[in-house]
Picture 1 (tube, rainbow, N blue to C red):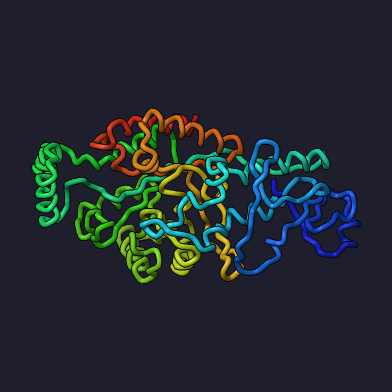
Picture 2 (picture 1 turned 45 degrees about the vertical axis):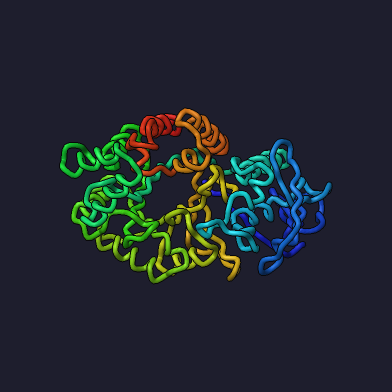
Length: 410
């Protein structure tokens, strides 16, 4: 069931309509459902503005609408501000990887980053709208879950070049990492399975819990930040081909593709050569993207879905929502065909940035899942194949992954 909505700027048409209706302007026309508009939605370009955050019952909101408005703030302007990532177009200090940081966001500053506020607002709006128009019917959505896996390093030791293997061995000696030395030898001489080769386990878990899964493969040339196995290695190509048989596969554009469209194109074509199918989805390595340039490059290459919308340092909802949305380009003032899928959490955020144990992480995961479930949203998680290895800094995280699947699908 779909809800049909008509828009009009003619007062006589609006007044003549007898069904549920809402006005969005500076003053109400009658006794209709009225939301007082903020100037943001009628401006062009990007302008710095002072924003005052208040509360709507127990949830944060901004762009106050005054006493005449049926709700206390301009829900449309506030939602647009968050979803368009308006604040990321404003002057800001980037981190050492050239990223917009969570700490500079309005959501972090006012402590609502871990709530999908736009979805919460929408349900509160619906409740009040239903009170005024009890016969109004609407389509209902249901909670969904997607597990996504980034493959930055398909193998810890296997299938690396001789030069890289020798360099890794010498580095282990220099840094006195004796366990690494033992494991490296055991793996290279086929005495032990490569610890990062967890793909069979991931597929088995996801089959057991009937979970939709996406794998994003980094297939870049080697750099300081891009250290995966070379796609010239038949075993790596075979791995990607085998995953395609069981799950959806996307591109993990390398560190330097953020503003390099030629490099992005090269990597996309490389993946398509391996999979023999069009590449339609991607997630930026290191979550390095700059708006609107990175998204404009993805659109030019006919990428249809992006899964980069989240922070490396903090869990939560970067765009204020757990609902996929189409990227709105503020430079050209148009809605684009690129659909953005925001994720709620990443394993390295929990482990490396927040310094949480697997047990502590499970609590945060449960909290975020509950927030999404409460608004019938889409819960997307980001793990890496190496975090299921139980190796070195990932001890106990394989069990956490399965526990997360249980929680997410319950």
